[in-house]
Each structure stands twice: as structure tokens, then as C-alpha cells.
Image 1 (cartoon, rainbow over the protein chains, first blue to last red):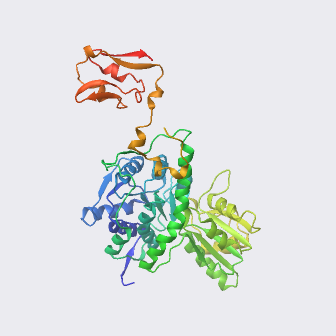
Image 2: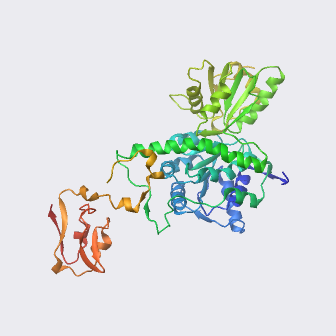
Image 3: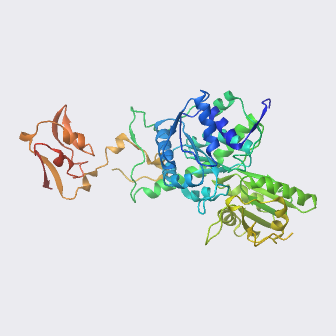
Length: 385
Length: 92
């Protein structure tokens, strides 16, 4: 590719993607660590480099409510949030999915209160795990950019029509600068194309009722249709990602297999932690240990077949969750366990990194060998060397 | 309403297009009282039409022409709003 590299944080990279997509409406409320995204985009609007309506709403509940209205009215709509913002928005996120509003949202993953914290974990994403939205976890700023460019195409597919969340780890990605290659503005505009929803509210020639009441005679059917839409997002993601890869030259898939071939033990993780694990995998491979990483990019929809295929030949699988489920199985672990059920593959899981606690490449040998405690990184439970 | 449809046959989000919405008879939700108008006292101020939450007040141009009981839920707002007492709630 001919484009020059720019030094950008994940937040700035997403703001550039939004400038290039040039959405019609962006209702948004600031919250750390998402703020740089919308701050960057607001500057583009103020400078006349983006032309949409930036709506300064009074809360995230209102942000998502306005987003539904504009997306269904016939306007390409994007927003962004983090943590408590997503928690406040959660009620309306379910409705956005149910009303099949193709909203694209940048999420700067941040731990939910309490105690109040501003740093990364995935508890905010997991809060809305079952809302019916797509959640795509990126590893770095470049991928945050690429995925944001991809997201409108996925959200707006006629067989999908669902909100798509591009999830980037708060601070680790949102605030860390790295070289990022941007596509030419014109390429992005051509790639995303025009916005169209099946029954635009503002089409007065064809009036329709959006979001109708559904009693026991239709509620179940409408929920089933939502499941089908999110399932359709999996092959749709592959198709759109293939198309984007032809523009960027950078592979993008629902899962990333890193040195999985021949690996006896495979670690499974989401987000920026994959970068840390890759370093640890390289060190172990150098020492002759057959270890690999499976990075789940699309957590919702969960790519069951790809995960089963990547893990089926391993002796052991170790799942790293950056969110806990008190009293039950952590979310990524539960997902992988359901895929591996009956396979005979040994399965272990660890919770790490809550509230921004670091995971280090040096933690990996104990994680892979099974010597690490259930909670990796707690002071009282050190990883044995 | 026609036969209940399978999930594959539904519009995304359950969106209801107009022709279909017109077949929804919410008048069945009334609990025993319906509005009745005494036309001699009606001054065509159309406050009932303006306030009716279910578009159940029928007009002929700008003249009050009655109620569409297929969609009237019997909320009594029209009777409350009527300044001349022309609308009364009566037993079904």
C-alpha cells in the first residue's frame, strides 16, 4: 500500500475512520477512555472535515435512543461509549438490536464500577453480551481503524441490520500511539457506500410502525429472527472482511490463529492481551514448547466452527478472561467450553487483568503449564516461575 | 388479523407496514364503555380528534363524524376534553 504511516492512538485512528465514513448523525456523550474518539471526531466536524450532525445528548441512554431514531429515519449513525456509559445505555442497546438499527459504536473497554475505575477490562462488553449486538474485539490501533471502516458494511447488510460494536481496550489501545496506515478518504467512501434501511421512517410515502408492541403471539418469533440476524453476521463478516483486506492488504478474520499449527497447548484470549500472549508464545516456541494463541476477534457472533477447528487438535486449551462472572463461569471460558464439550480436549481457564491490572509475557509459562492460579495477577497468588 | 406468521416471514424488527397496521383491531381492549356523541351539542371544535391517542375520531373534512370503534380503547379522553358535554361514555 502506498499510504504513509501516521502516529495515532486507537482513539485517534477511530476518529479518522469516522471522518472518512462521514456518518450523518453522531449522538454521543463523553466518557473516559472513549472521549478521545469523539473529541477527535468533534474537531473534524468543527473544522468542516466531517459533515454529519454531532448531537450533544445529556446521557448515554439518550445517545443510544437518538441513535435508534436517526438510524431508522434513514441516517447513517455512529456513537461511542465506555463502561458506565454502556451500562446506562444497556436498556436501549437491547432495543436497538430488537429494532434492527444498524448503528456502529466504538467501545473503549473499561471496567464497570464498583469500585469505580477507569482502566480496561471487558466487564462492560459482557454486560450486554446477550443484547443481540455484534461485538468485535481488536488488538491494536491499526485494527481499531480497519474494523471501524468495516463495521458499517456489516451492520447495514440486509440480512444483518444490527448494531456493531468495535471494542478496543481502554487506554491500552485508545490512548497508546502506534504507526497506523489510513486508507485514502475516497477508498473508504466507496467501500462503505450509501446508507439504506428497509423502511426508513422519513419515507412518508410508505408509512410504517417501528418497534411495535409484541405479545406472546409474536415476541418469541421476533427474538428468533434476531438470533438468525446475528448468526448471519458471521458469514457476512467474512465476506466484508475479505473485501476490505483487498484494499488494506491486512488480514482480518473472526478468529486469528497465531502459531496454532502443531501446538499442543493453545491459549484463547480477546483484545490487546493477544499482543502480550504472542510475545510469550514466541518465547516458549523458541524454547521448544509447542504453544499457540487463538485470538477471538468476533465475540458476538461467536465463531463456533472456526474455534472448534483451531482447538480440536490441541491437548490442552487455556482460556484467559478479562471479565468475571461471580458465581458462574467467566464468559469466554463458558463459550469455549460449550464448543469443546465432548471433544476430550483438556480445558482450563483464568481470570486476569480486571480493572486494568497488567498481564506480562513472563506470566505465560505458568499459564500454559497449568501452574498459574485461577486469578492471574493477584498479589496474594503469584504465578510460580 | 390474518394467520400468525413464522419468524422467517417477519420484517426486520417486526416493523409493521401501514396496510397491516390497519387490520389491528385494538377496540377489543375496551373494558365496557364506549364514547357516544350527541351531535346537536357538538360545535366541531375537534378537540376530541386532536386529543384522541388512537386516531379513533372520524372527521368529514373539518366536521366531527363519529368514532371508529375498531380502534377506540375507551380511554375517555374525548369525553373529558369535550367543552360542550356532547360526548358521553355509555355501556357497550
